[in-house]
Every structure is written in C-alpha cells, then in structure tokens.
Length: 365
Ligand code: GLA
Image 1: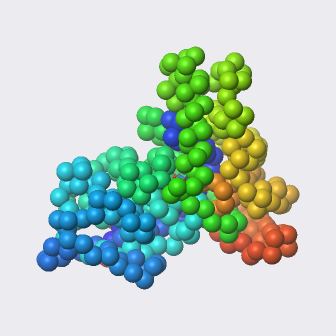
Image 2: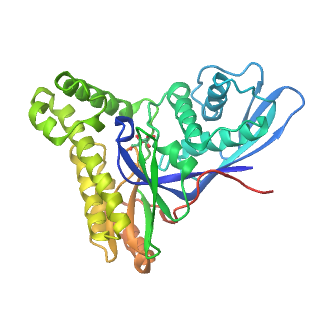
Image 3: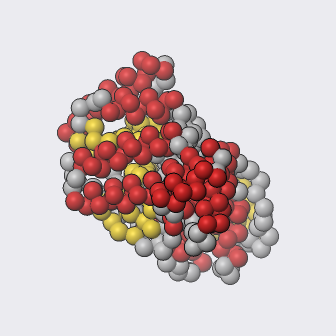
C-alpha cells in the first residue's frame, strides 16, 4: 500500500508552467493505493470514494480519456506504458481523504499513489522528480488539464514540517522548516473548482500570448520566468489589458515567492505574511482567479489575532484559502473564521488544521 499526499501552496500561483518558483507543502490528507497481482490478465481499479470499479485487459488498456475518475489512474498506466514499463495484471483499490475540487490536489495524489503502487508491483524504480514529471504528463495528455509540475512534485518530494521551494525549470528544490509555533490552517470556501477544460486553461493561453509578445523583443524570454517588471513596463502596452494583468501577476509572483522562501528561512514571519497578502491581491486583481468567497475568507482572516498571512491557494476560482497562524491561536482562529464566514454567506466552511507532511511513501501492512 502506498500513500501520496495532497498539498497546500503557500505562495507561487500559476508560476509553475512559466518555469518559475512555487512554495507548497504536502499536507496530512492523502490518497492510498493498495495493490496486488492478478493471475487472469486483468487490471481492476476500484475507488472506495466513488464506490465503483473499472476493469480492463492489462494488454489492452484505454488510450484515451472517458471523463471518469478512472482517467487519473488509467492516464498513469498509459504514460508508464509509453515509458516502456510493462503493466502487470493487478487489482488496486484507491481511497483518499483529500477534499475533491478544493484546490488541494486530490488529482495529483491519485496519480502519484497509483504510480508508486504500479511501479512497485512492476519492480521498476524511477526517481521521485521523474515520477512527478510522468504524473504531470498523465494529467496533461490523458486527463486533458494543462497543469504545471507543482502538485505532482510536492506529492512526490514533500517533507514533514517543511515547505518546499521548487525551481520549476531546473526542478532543483530546497526544504524550509515551518517553525513549530506556526500552523497551517486551511479554510474551504466550499466553492468547487475543476481544471479539466475551464478557466485554468484559458489563463494558460493568456499567459502564452503575453510571453510571445515579450519574446518578440527579447528572444531569450522562453517563459515568463525570464521576464522582468522592467520588460513589462517597456512592452506591456502592446498587450491586451487582460493579458497584461496575467503577465504582471506571474512576474511579480515569481519575485514574491523567492522572497517568501528567504523570509521563511530567516524566520521573518512579518515579511512572509505581507507577501502572502500581496500574493492574494495580485491573484484577485491581476490574475482574476479569485472569487468573492475566497476574498471574504482572506479579509476575515486578516482581522483575527494570530494571523500571519492568508491567501487563496491552488488553481483558483474557488477552493481553499491558506492561513499561516500562530499555533497558540490556531484553534480559536479557525472557529472565528468559520463563524464570520457562516454569518456572511450562510455557508458552513470546512476548516482544516494541517501539518506539513511527507511525500509519497509505502505503508507497511
Ligand atoms: C493547479 C495546477 C498547478 C498550478 C496551480 C496554480 O494546482 O495543477 O500546476 O499551476 O494550479 O498555481
């Protein structure tokens, strides 16, 4: 049995596919994949969460998606096959408690848990960063969501009590300890979001459009990671307003993410908190990927005692906000946030007091 965690992104939103920086932490919600070999040539994958199973011949697995939960594990099998891994016959049961559609990467958790389990059964070893890339490929080419590398990477390489600063170009990373007196409180707007199709892909297209405009002037700009605020000042006027704003978010977010990692490493929580709030404003106003419910949660959080910083986390358009809160105040903070949100919206939000957790690992039976 293998586990792969969900994640919360502390800062660095929509920067991964711009070859930039992200700083997520794995959380203590996970998907578990229990696998055993079969002798009849079949692949049977069961989801305890959906109460359903799919059945295929191991030598005749689907090559295209069917817009079903099984696209995630089957996408992983398709990618492994392309890598030359012979898929053995097996039964696998998936069960997880990562909230779905909450921006906490339930999909990456399924992909990574599946890959870890299948590789173990096939007796094939692949380094964790490469596993992350392959799981991303499954999501991009099979599931059809053009997401970056962040979620799969943190599900593979996360570490207990640490945030991970990832350079999405080189895949080099550094772990920064989260101090014991700082808690990760996650608050769920209960507004669902999805990546497949939707706004996420629209944002990506806008970002590509802006990158192409800057590249005309500076061909060395391969991705927005290579662009500066100064480039934007010079050539941003050639972009449609919406594109300019998306690009501005990403360029400034990259700078904030690197600064936030430095602040966390220095123990400068004040600066870290300020950067989180600034990141939220940029996500809301420039990237226009927030929603009124998330804005409200961040505003309510900012008024509570013990709140260091707060922002909408994940792909956007709903999902959760992440709050860095002084541990001594975390429980009360969560209760006040819930009360305030409920009063204003009539919605009872889920509040999770999380711990930064390890990446994928085997669970001993
Ligand atoms: C989703 C994607 C990630 C990343 C975030 C936004 O979680 O899966 O690759 O782009 O959105 O930061």
